[in-house]
Length: 101
Image (cartoon, rainbow, N blue to C red; front, side, top):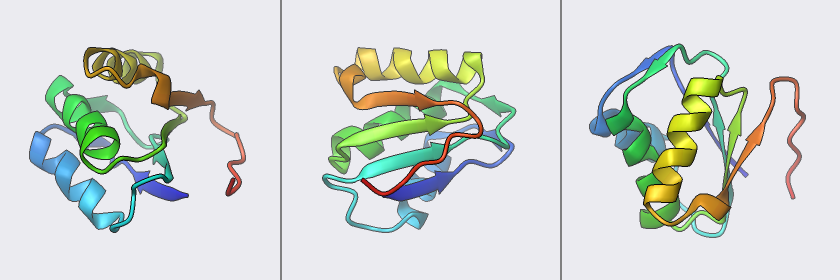
């Protein structure tokens, strides 16, 4: 399992690429947890790029959005649907304990 911790504000495609890159290599086949506990605002371009880079470019098996606001979850699911990977995105409410699986 790989975790990507989102900061309070995210706004560019480059920011998405940097965050994914900082999480390390070897995402292929992994469950990637996107921790959005601190997130307050994300642009559509950031979300589109995050989904693309995690699931399409790097081949993660699953992207779990942890503690996402309703607006952020809607953005993520919309981006995933537009890119044909909606079945690879799940939600986990705040307080969910994610174990390596």
